[in-house]
Structures are given as structure tokens and as C-alpha cells.
Image (tube, rainbow, N blue to C red; front, side, top):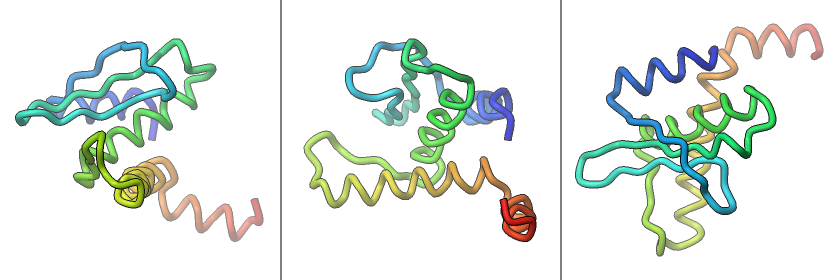
Length: 106
């Protein structure tokens, strides 16, 4: 999926996206009082691919309801991060493309 389509998905879902300096990470998804937002630290992206992967993962938190509080148990945090990344993988690498790559040994 192209980067602009990910931004379109966020807009369709009424998820606001902010440019925000974030220590130790490229992006975060926030859900507070039914308000959804994604903060991206654009200064940390070296390429549009990094931006696309980060945005896809943050959207995964929204679509898979993979949220957690800051004081959550590390096991739970890891589970929620895995779920968000899983959504990103599905959206960024369509199944048919993956099958074709495996068939062609890429």
C-alpha cells in the first residue's frame, strides 16, 4: 500500500496526525476519551519507507484495538505491539504478493 493511501485511511477514520518530537520512538498511537491521534516524529525518518512502516504500525494499533497504558505489564505491551505490527504486515505486503515472492524465491 502506498504511503498516501495510509494517510487517506487515517483521514477516513478521523485519526488526526501530528508532527511531534518523541523521545526513543518514531511514532505513537493515542486513544483518549474517544479521540484518536497518531504522533509521528518526522525528523527521525530517513526515508519514506520508514515513515510508511511507522504509520502502518500506528494504524494497526487503531484497527486491531492494540492499545495499552504506560504502566502496563511488558508482556501485555509486547502482545499489543505484535498485533499492531501484524496489521501493518498484512496491509503493506498483500498475501498474493508474498506468495509470488516465495514462488520466485525472493
